[in-house]
Image 1: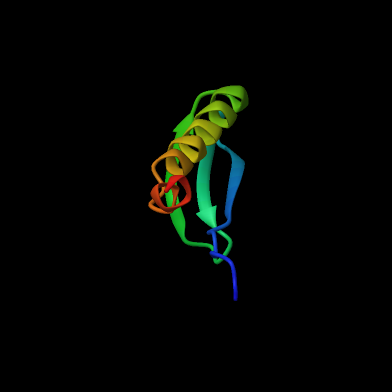
Image 2 (image 1 turned 120 degrees about the vertical axis):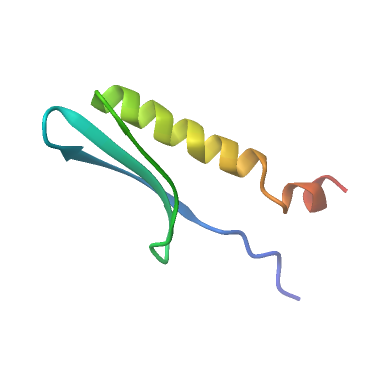
Length: 67
């Protein structure tokens, strides 16, 4: 019997012109789930990690695990 399969996500940060940073949360297949831009690398990292946390917090498989 196989266990439940969970999605795997990646967080990426990329510098853009004029001191801005873009961030994205993607699946391992490369599909962008969330993305944004921030004025500093630290802010972009924070927003990306927060977006990943919120995504995992609201994942549909969470309700199956707590039952």
